[in-house]
Length: 431
Ligand code: EPZ
Image (cartoon, rainbow, N blue to C red; front, side, top):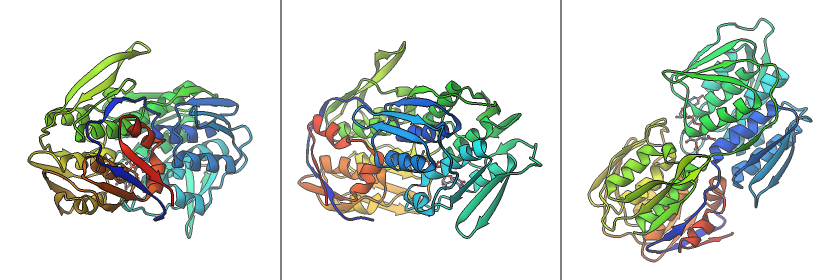
């Protein structure tokens, strides 16, 4: 991990103001990959200018796509007509796990693809067996040579088109959906992931002309079509950026308004904030005939709550560490259980350096609320941990230095400026 640079955060009580959200990175990434299926010019709006998006732009450009990204306007133009390469290098896969998402659409359009096994990452082993088994069931022949994976459409294509996931993997669902959109006949995915980002991605594919339906319980049915067309699409507002801003206001005893936030994407998280004693006003704004907007007025005396991460609509793993930061200063004992990734509690040690009292047993953390936190030098282990430590730093006495700005940059688009606008004393100090 690069130790160059850090985020300096000083105690900033009563954050207050209104912030517009950018689009969700985890919706933008698969939607960008899905544009491989089209020829002609597409336009995406609200694309966050975060490092993972830039990496995906590099990857897709390397395959031959023509991309223009206006990072100030968050507007991305994409033309996949000139894509002529089906190989993703090992180096690229290692830099960004989400690169695996180009395999499904490459295989659908060019009948072959090559990628490398992504490395494990700090939050867990993160295998890709669901993706590869799904491709095989859809008629691809997979061969492995050391670290490389080759996939080629088999002429004697398998007609058994029912994919049953043991676990509702977000990336595997997206990859199989992309692959199946242009496969003749019907494909069913049972136990599919239904995160808001997955639904936005399916919305974009439907605009392209894909035939995708849902069935209870958690089943996606894709009927293949011959061609898909370019689209114009606005990415859904980022519920993880929204969560970070709500928690920043909550922990500092302030108030924040997110006029474009969609509360339907974060019901359980909002319930937990209410249980802590924070006041929430939902749907005070309207967009395209829908009520949107979340306003939080923090209690000065928050109560501890328990959370357990699960696939949507359970509590999102990506908000587990930011929520834990808030629990450090709540009254009472909060239990936090991580069930999605096997190793996503590394922020605990860092929060302890700031005075938090947490004990960990396997994937469960017990957070004993304390009176106050103090500034310390801490290290972010992943992108969501970086925001968790910043949130803790906003409430901690003195200065907190969060090392690992590469993680911060991966997941957020100028979030430091949005926090500053609310009154936060935060500076990103480049190394
Ligand atoms: C997506 O990752 C997100 N990334 C993650 O966001 C998010 O934490 C995760 O979904 C869960 O919501 C993107 O959308 C780009 P999974 P993904 O496949 O698709 C296991 C963030 O902070 N699994 O749903 O990789 C896996 O190991 C990031 O923005 C297999 O065993 O997640 C994990 O334990 C981090 N085999 C669980 O499933 C497989 O083939 C869920 O992973 C695939 C996954």
